[in-house]
Structure formats: C-alpha cells, structure tokens
Amino acid sequence: MHYKMPPNEYFRKLIELYFNSREPKYYNPNIFRGRSTSISSELEDLTALFIALNNPNSCSYFTDQPLKFSNAKTKYPDIVIQHEKNEVIYDLVDMKADTGWNRDGMLKFCEEWDQLIKSVQGKDTHFVNGKTKKKYTGKFSDNLKYHVVVATEVNSGKKILEDYKSVKEQCENVELYILSKGIHPNHYGLSQDEILKKIVINNSEFDRLMNAIIKV
Image (tube, rainbow, N blue to C red; front, side, top):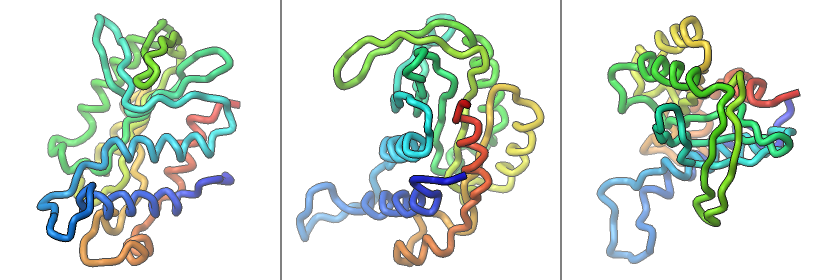
C-alpha cells in the first residue's frame, strides 16, 4: 500500500525517541541520567500518528484512553479508533516496544483480551476526553478487534515467534504483529542512522495492520 508516513520513517522517529529519552528533560552540563525515561506514551502517540496519516477513513484517535468494559471494568487501550461518521469503535491498539517484560509469553495475554473483546462486541460505551473533559459516546463494533503491536522481536525471546503463530490460530478477536527484527531501536554504541540501517523492518506486518484497520 501507499504510505504517507512509511514504516522506515516510523522507525526513524522511534529511534529518535529512544535517543532523546537518554537525555535530561532540562539541559545542564552537570546533569546526567542514570536510566532512560520511559517512551511508552510517546510511542502510543507516534503509532497513532502513523495510523492516522495512513488511514483514509475519517476517525478520531484517543491514546491511553480509559474505557468502560463489561462488569464495570475500566481498561486503558493505548489507542482507541472511533469512526466519526457512526461513532463506532472497530479497532483498539495495544503498543509494546518489545516483550522483554513478559517472560511468560504473549499467548495468555492475548487470550485474556480475546475473551474481553468478545464480551463487549456490539455494546455501547462512553469515555471522557482527557484534555477537554468532553464526554463521548460510542459503540463497540460487532467485529471489534484488538491489535497487539510489538515494535521489535529483539529482547522478546524465541517464545514470541511461537506465540505469534498460536495467536493467529487460537484468537478470533486479537491480532499480534511484530514490526521488526535485527537490532533493537534502543541499541547503544551506534548512531541513529546506523541503527536504522541495521533494523530489519517487517513491511508486510505494517501492511497487515493497516489493511485490518482501514474500512472500505
């Protein structure tokens, strides 16, 4: 497909986020960070931008948005995509830099979300804009999907590839994507341009994600 923001540009911006996270927010020659700051919220916004620029549908995108689910549960999908024409939410996106945090693998995580998504398909929901406090109403599509997007398989262990296959076979309402391999976007010892050259971008995964989100 034709991209207004291509996958290569997405990763260029992601690498830049990691490099910036190593620096103090406020400059002083005597201030140094021992650990990088988290890029989680910025990664959510970057991914929302990538989808918004490449999605021809008229949609609103809400990042880190509290949503009411079944049994009064509140969940926080990284990206909620609501179509402006009918206020229907067809897709939710969960963005992971990698899965090194989850040594048990992603299958159980995806299976739990698969059941949760099934329980709210076709139901109404409501939420509040975090900036304006405007109240929104909406409806979950009968075919609501949850897209778990992993930026890189590096640091994720071999199990991520097993889980990738299992999720495809066992989960009806959840899709798992792995956007790259090779080296981690947060690799040390190389320049930003050098890292970008060494990352192996899975363009077909970007295509699969966008083809699932775009509604004809």
